[in-house]
Image 1 (cartoon, rainbow, N blue to C red):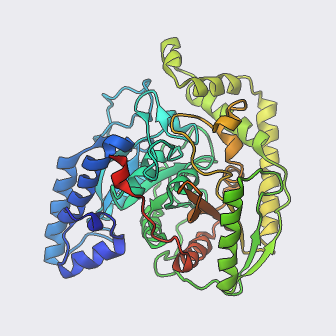
Image 2: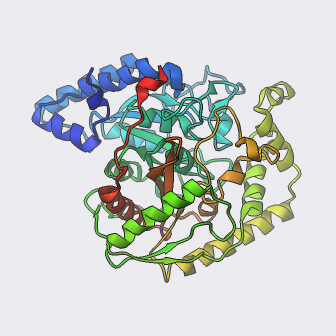
Length: 471
């Protein structure tokens, strides 16, 4: 099967389906061939259903030949993170505590919307246990690895999605982001991922971690994420926290012009310690925004590290989510997650309410900040990818927490703003470096436009890993 077909964009595939040059069956077989060849090295999937995928692809092929595609993405190979429900398939959440027998009778809203528009779901991608950390390994599925260097992590918690995306194992990949879980793996694997405004993509069941948890697209190009968001943002009555439907057309509205936009560039948010190679790559990337006609000012948004707020909300959510596990199930948990659960159980109602109040203050501060600046640009992460199977690099082992190397991501879960990661360069070891673009609440299109504009002029746009090195 043609390797290039596995790396075709959704736009290219849809154009090919329309004129008959490509069929959905060919595209699906190309994705499945990549899985067969490379997933043994990467461990990106917890489930692949080849028979189901090919059956859906043949149905799509029939529709295209008749000139009657059922939706915007008919025939596009797609994966779902194994945190999100898929009817008929187990959703194991990386945990031995989940009974694979089910029943599994429901689709999550994003799964349902993608299926309605003709997506060919090929399988489910790996996650750390209950999506709790910024790398992807779990007691249930083992260690997931980075296509750029299989000795390193692809990040997490949507690490299976990012590894699959970078390796051509599908075109559309659905991730979740409760503290950076789309942007972290997108940065480590050199793909594009966006955490849209909270509620833009409906979710059900709602995350026990609360209103920091978002659902979003992960793709190899910005345009493909715009197409995905157009579909995934359609309403679902099961999410009472979702935003009202919008008339915004993310695909038609995509523009490479950001001339005159005011961009705040914050190299460290005022408190982070950033690897020199990351800092240099991001600084160079910022110059491209100036070349595109944006007005860039180096300025911090002016808040202290909100990690105590995040930890209070996140840990208490973990304790609540797993409160009914038996002693045996607790013993089988990822040891790091069990520690979080134990710490979360100590959090008082007063602690929780104080954290929520502080979170509100942070959200107000950022809304005021965006009265002056259209966008905020930062590094996506402090560091390039590190050794797979570890929670943190060796020099942070004494601290041992994934949040210590992700200080740019969780603040914008607290504020619920749209934020993305796009590849902006490589480390001396050839590992991708991500640039984060943050927009005002509910202005997802401005984030997509800035990323799209950057993608058009970036010298690293479209870079692929040398997958043969995995074998």
